[in-house]
Image (cartoon, rainbow, N blue to C red; front, side, top):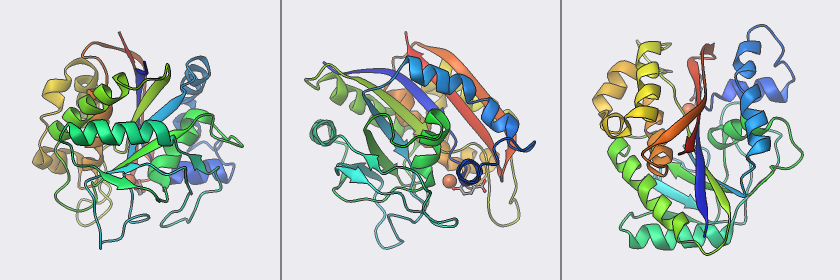
Length: 279
Ligand code: DHB
Ligand code: FE
């Protein structure tokens, strides 16, 4: 049977991708950001997944304001990089895993979570930046990736509690898959940031630290953080952090925190990263 062995939480700051793509990672500004991922890249080599299930958000790249699915599962054979802002990153095409994705669609939808099935989808920095910081620069991504796009762009996004319970349904789906494979789950986005209006530039390290502590130690409490609290404490884009709860729900209650990295600033936000292994 397939097994979820570990979870990775990771920011997706687009400027981090640009720093890698333009070879400026050794500049003083970026050095401490990338230093925190050195251990992660070692750990990835030692714990190579067969498949990554990657929870992320689209930034009006694949979806315009015309259609906004709450949860969209990537069931295609491949996903091409595209982006707003800086444009498509020069990174490899992301290969999917259609057999496992179809199984997850069937299991999770019959488990009463109404996913949107995406047989064609482009992927932006929300998905490619976490892959880049975990794998470094590569000619091909080392394993297939199943994307799950979550709406955190237009109100109302799903609650942390809904994300946590969806993670549990994804866990049940993977546990019932008939191949002996090792699946790793990524929850991405965050940390605290606000890109617009009066509070643009807001970063709240105290909130971010509490978020990371609760994620590891008390996810039931952390999953109850309300939209209002994210907005107030973590800024208007801080709501991206609910996606980490899909990852957390798919893990055991009891996890070991293997690595944590937190650094301010990177572009307009804090970089947050955590690696959790099932105990
Ligand atoms: C920034 C952060 C994001 O999450 C994003 O999607 C775009 C920009 C930033 O910090 O600049
Ligand atoms: Fe974002």
